[in-house]
Length: 303
Image (cartoon, rainbow, N blue to C red; front, top):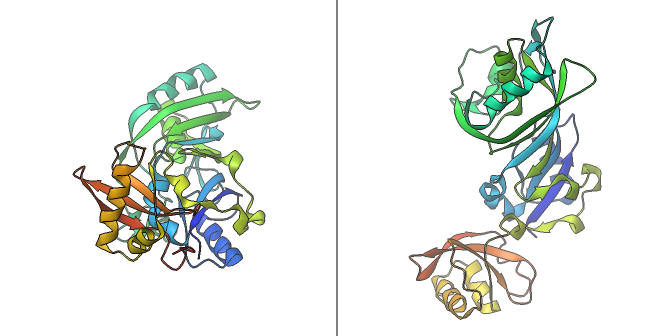
């Protein structure tokens, strides 16, 4: 069965795991995963991985993320967004100029404690499940990087719109909470929309209702800057079977190739086929070793 990537514009009201389950049913795929969890109330780009492409999840999760939405000031909640219990209200919020100045302190490398309702595991248990059970636990701060944090006024002085460009693992809810703490009035996220992940853009995504195999992209789009290596059918078959002789023949192809870019990784595919098959890694500049096979020998139609 084919392996590939599907870009979904996730609607609100469904978990990322729920999207995965629905795609699996609709496409009758063997395995489905995703790269980068979105909160149930969040919308936007979710990169869904089909079958063997799930092995490339780490590559899909890399890259800067861009989010937009609204933050509400003057309120503190149990979940750092407006879906949680309101713990405190503040009658006054600072002027917008003060908010803009405070935002500048949240760019660059910052320390951030994830929300207590995040998917981070604590002693093998998801933090959000522990929180709902009323369990006591602490989450350690982690270093993240915010490249851009822009805010604009809205018609409501307690609500600001934002655009954030950040490293993987950054929590927008934590940014809203921490901004509110600095301002002394509290803050929580009102809405989150992921508009970009790495080189993927939500404008290229499809709705969950329109999922079909014709919209699945080759998993090689996860590694657009990695050189491609076309090998003959015999070599492709050997590589997909994990045979070491296939590595030697692939290296011969690489040496004869007109493309001489040196890099750690190389994506290989069979001549005459548009589908990427697997990933090789250059070892000591003189040979290949297996990184992973994404498609299987059963899928290589020409093999």
